[in-house]
Length: 269
Image 1 (spheres, one colour):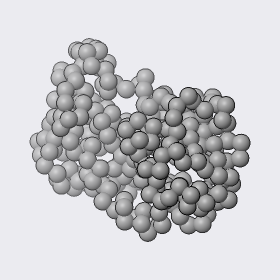
Image 2: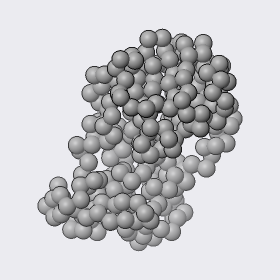
Image 3: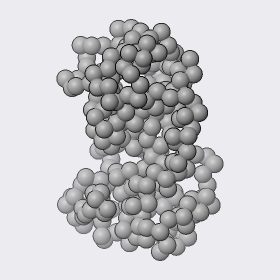
């Protein structure tokens, strides 16, 4: 599932590609991906423009010049492609937005959605989300307060979107490894020094992942050399049995609350 770095990569690239470009139409092959009737969705989009793209947690917010906001959550298996019709991957699309000869294809949107809301409605829908871990205003002091708000292990806490926004299976494991702390550790067991290591690791890992386009290796457009480049840089995620990059011991995979979890028992404590 796309997490904060993947959605931030989409935001940055799509801002350059489609912001301000007239929308010439749309297609909907899966009405359940929307929260409005397809005819209404297409009518409201045609002739409109996207004036700004924001990200909140794992969501993208496409702000339209007419005031509506398209709220996107890709969920598991969802991704996007932008380009001409003959460039499109041979995959089923659920929604397509046309920008003249180029199109934004929403692929694998079986569990995800592209909903149309007012700005007020979006604020209400996203109000339950936790702090953004990369916000300049989110300090170590605030991080410590967040840690005290939940009584669970690190893995469960990090993937809880009401705890912190945008972190999921991949980056929870990568952050814990970077900090040298087991994801199975209880939040209450962390010393202040470990809390600080975790805070610094969270910022370092997420910023590095954004710089390398996240880990989901599905190019956004033909010639895209950024999207998915962090996949090769993952230190523990999906590397079960491989030698730890830090100490050489085989990496472990287990399940924590039905989520896969990767770590090194030798150099994470």
